[in-house]
Length: 406
Image (cartoon, rainbow, N blue to C red; front, side, top):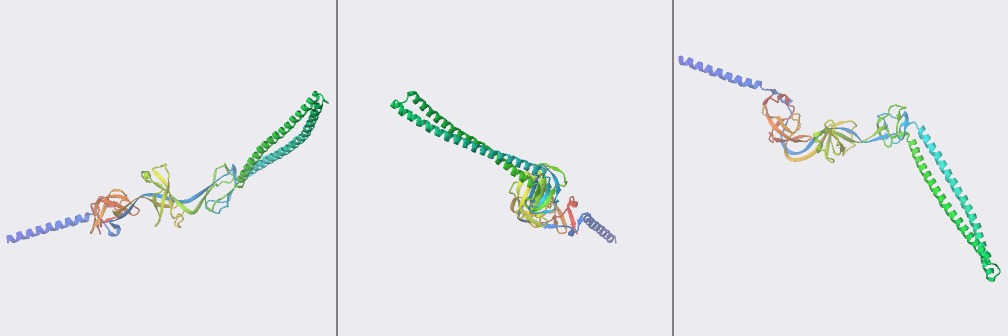
């Protein structure tokens, strides 16, 4: 009887201890954090190629933007087009006050007419002077011929003793004097011709200069009604009629929406990796467009570097001005690496806490990630090929060693 009671007590004790152990185990499991499987996004670690990239943000802008500037000092009379208007080549955008330009053209017309009159007067004066010298030359040629005839006659008579030596010398002196006068007349005609030609060349140069100035003034006057050089959309223009403008001031900006570029920004820590010609991928919603870096701004501002991307399909229908896009600078390609699809579970290169699914549990692992691409992270350590990892946001469970999956 006593033995039977002892066995009952032992059995009861063992049962109570077993129930207590079971309750402790189940209670511990119940205290673990849990998450519904439908809230988890998972992916398998695989092996394959990975194109390393740097993430940047960009803005789609027209590839070509024309700046229209004032050709002269003027005043805005009328604004003919407004920002957002579509413009055809040759359309007038602004009308400027052209009174000063017209006065400038009229003044140049007067100066040009005056120089042309002076040139005509110089040509007439030269003609009159040359005619006068030509008459003098003919007269002196006749005098020289007559003086030479008398000198020859005096020499014959002197040889026959019919005239004195004094008469002979006088006739010969008269002939030499006539020769000198004829030579002087010819030299005067030559000098007069060269002088007049030089004067005419100077006047011709002045006339050519004035004509060029007049043509430029007329061109600027015609530009007074600012016209578009190409078709596009007006993105900006002066808005105040009557406002004064100086020569060279920007009057309007015209964008060609037939093609686009991307102006992008990235953290300055990556500035050294930005090289002209580097391939780039631009994501527009669900579309990915290829491009390359064509310009890098050497100046850094507010901790960011800026660069310009030329797109291979710059006229894609998905592009529109001022659209914000994601930009990936493709810096490296690696084949046969362990990789895990991108997700909110990690920020990027370095040590991360990653939960690996094992049955009804997700166990935390220390994982080292390498370079990243648009779609994947490189796995350097902590995971094996085929592991199922949680790639959704797990910040709520970052301090838990494991999480129950319901």
